[in-house]
Structures are given as C-alpha cells and as structure tokens.
Length: 424
Image (tube, rainbow, N blue to C red; front, top):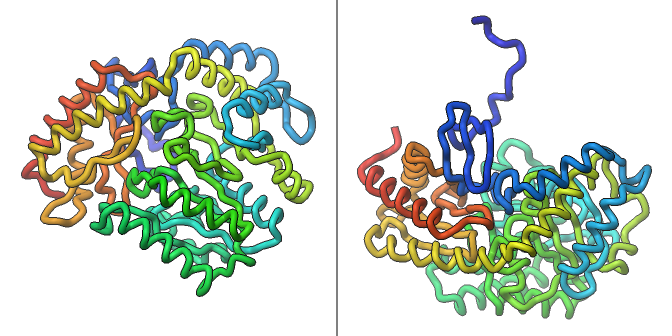
C-alpha cells in the first residue's frame, strides 16, 4: 500500500488510541463496535452526551434551512434568539453577547473590549490559568510552560498574580487567600498601577491548571478591588460553566458577579460556538468593528446551543451534575483512603481531579499509565496539571450512578495495575 500523500500534522497528539465511529449518550463506539465510557466529554464539550436526539434534530432542521448566515453581513435569526435565552441565564446586567467559535476567540475579544472600554493597557491573570492558544489568550495562560514554549515573545501588558491553590502551597485556605490578596495589592504598587489595569481575568475553577477551585473570600477580594479601582472583572467560564460544576455558572459557588463572562465548550454539545457576555453599556464602550469573524455565531451551532439549553433545563442536568458529582466525590474519597498515591482529590460537580504523587513529587507518569489501563478496560479519561499529574473526571452532565460506579471500579483496577509501573 502506497504512503498517502495527505497526512495529519505530526504535532497533533492524540490522548487515546481510539477512533470514534459513533457517539451515543455517555459512550463512544469504535469502528469494530467496541464501546467506551467517555469521561472526557470532548474536554467538557458534550454536556448533553453524544448525539442527544433533541440537539441532533435542531441541527438537522437548521442545516436544511440555512447553514451559514455571516453575522456581520446578514442577520441569522438564531443569534438574537440565543442571546435572549442566554440573557435569562447570565447574572446581573450582563445582557449583551458577542458570538464566536472557540474559547480562545472570546478571550481575545475580552482583551480588546477591556482595553478599549477603559483606555488602560494591562490585564491581570492568575497563576495556573488557561485561556487559550492564540497569541493574546496564550499570553494570559500559565497552566503549563509547554503551551508557551518556542513562541515567545508573548503579548505585553499581562501581569500574573498568585491563585489560592492550597494544596500546592501546603497552606490552609485562609493562609493561601491572605497571601494571594496581599500579593495582588503589592502588584498594584510595584508592577501595574490600578490606573493602568484594565481588568482582572480569572477562572473561578481552574481547568487545565489542575482543577483547582477558588474560594469565596478570594473572589470577594477580587470584586472589592475591582470596584475600588474601576477595574473590570472577567470570569473565564469556558470549561467550568454551563452546569459543569453543579451550578449553571461556577462563580455562583462564590456569590460574586463579574463584569463579563467568557462562554464556550458545553454551550452547544459539540458544535463550535462561544460567547462573550457583558452589559450593553460595557459592550458599547468597545470600538466599532472590533468584534466580528467569518464563522462566529454560525446558524447551525446556534440552533444546537438553543437545543442544548433546553435539554439542560428539561432534564435538570445542573441538579444532576451536583448530585452525581457528590456521588463521584464520595467514591474518590473512599479510594483515597486505600491508595495514598492519590495525593489530593478536588473540584466541584462533574469536574473532579485526582492528583497523583510519588515520594512527595508530582507523578505524571503514573497518571498517564492509569489512563492507558482505563482505556484497555473501556473508560476514557484525560490528564491535566503542569506535570500532567492530574487525572481528571469530566463525564457528560447526563451521567448516571451506575456509569460513575463502573468508572470508579475501572479506575481502581487501573490503580492496582499501575502500582509498580514506571515510564519506559
């Protein structure tokens, strides 16, 4: 057989060895008919599971009606409908939406908006955050040096502040929070004066950085400083939003309202669409022409998003995420008692992370071996964290108790099978 002329880039690395021929609910089926319990959800995207009938029907109907109505040329009727529906779900005065394709694009849109709206150049982000791979969003990303390696210099005007990762620091929540807020105040007098700080941009629950939740006092401290200095507060809800954490928005756990929200991943059950939400007044302070894009707010993706929201509401999937997340956490905590290499279990809802360590050091190799053993047994999961030491649990919001119990059983088998394995 001759070598094909066209190939995928060798830089595209696949986390599993699976080819997905079909997807149904919480399962992926390969070309041979083997079924895998999918606890990756396409990195938190397939919130309603694979190919939910209502989402499929909405997309099929839209495909037969209008596939592409370019948003800055003609109005796609699905977009104002989606904006109206999202306006019912977003907090406070956040009632205006810019639609794009991916989380990284709304991160770029957020940078443009906060700089234009305030006339200030700097953006403060938090250590361990992930906001995308395009140059502006990548400049704000500090979850792993590998993402930034080889493409410097980064965009200027980005200042990194500490995040209250209690397990990393080895401190109590109070100690970590005191330190982070104190260092943030120090940044204002040593690095970026409030008069030059446009915004603070933060994940209420860090994703790629290791599934690390913030806490209420830290988030309240950010809101207090933002209000005091006229700084905008932007929440990156790309991974943790849309019911993933057991609340519709992950920041609801902390009782703090942002000035803008970045939305993507779970919004449309796998169709590429993202959104930046802000008040109409804040959006109007951006410069005309600063928001746009050829494919942003595609009609089919918008129809799928509307159907996704309907499914989340009709099937009470946010409540299910909370309930199933509690069940998952109980199972992981029970395993931790017998497997001390599970150094930490953390997260909220159906966004749980298990940090693997060996002799006190992050053990990315063990986490990788665990994922391979899980795959052999029909369970797909992913890693994250700076050392890839976090086994992350990211099932669809439709997951049920038997599926979680099955996954926990497979995970324990993988823990046993990898006890003495080391990397080649």
